[in-house]
Length: 443
Ligand code: ADP
Image (cartoon, rainbow, N blue to C red; front, side):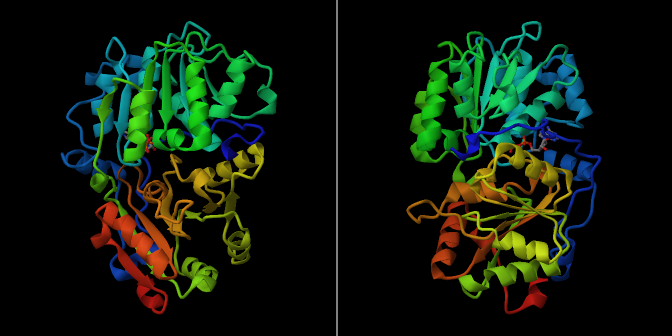
């Protein structure tokens, strides 16, 4: 898979981040004219409001202290400005950390803190005096694996002896013995490392599969995950996390992680309130480039991601010609180049990231206030791809922040696919049309 292109890995990406120090980025400033402007406010204020509302996925009755985490781990959470657990953290952690360890299949909306939940369980269960792998995380892309490594490092910054390793293709790592207690990687590389005895899997006691529905569903990735699992001890804790678990994958997930505690959501409840959804009515496929450029000309946007089906470079060229700082990431790039591109975007040096579904899942960059679906996400057979839509728009509106998602619709077929998707998630009513014949209104 593209995720495992033979390449180098760079420094660990930034992970969590200080939440309430930053100002919440409201909707793009220039959207204010039509009443879309979100007031500027401090995230802290909003967060505590949201965390006080029992219907909000960020709500919790407990504190981190009540979740029986070790003091040095709590210290790490405080350093990250995590004040209270979110609903998924509050519910998943006691089940994950109970002895004897039990498997878990857990679902929660994008950006609600799933990563922190499984990271805290790993940090709690690993013996840091032993320099051998004890917990393994599989993720669908090198970018997500590197990001999770960053989260482990940040949350575990006060944990003595902790060593976490990214298992992504990296020529520099080729013959090095893996001594980290926590390993996060893409399935192909992990399998390779175990087979070549670069990584000793005998002491592994936890396997986490992040974005599990995607990992288990795809032919290639699913087989690799199964093979990795077969190389691990038989009595381990299996943990599957995702925002989406379509019915057809559920059976398979239950075989992969038998007798699991399950935290599930209905698909009608999966969207995040802070993500405002729009569609831009484009006058036919040919006008998409022009309208995209025009659109960006009108707006002042902090960071945004443009998702498209293929990796054609026209958008990048036109946007660059218009003076935008653009980064372009596709699965076809060499790993070290991919690292450079995502790091440029994370640091804010590039404000616009153009990418494909390789980055639809998991990527957490808090300054992203807008996601554009240049194409309506669809499956290989042309059916609407509900899950991909949800994951793509979930790159904004992270943990109580506000964001905007705009899907380009250029004909009847793309329009009806988008309608199907928004009906599926019960947000058709909230979807707002933007008309390219009326740019004043768009603005
Ligand atoms: P998910 O895996 O559910 O998509 P993440 O775990 O990436 O979500 O969390 C989204 C963002 O929210 C991250 O930037 C993370 O640092 C932050 N976050 C997670 N849990 C908390 C918390 N309890 N308090 C404050 N911020 C949090």
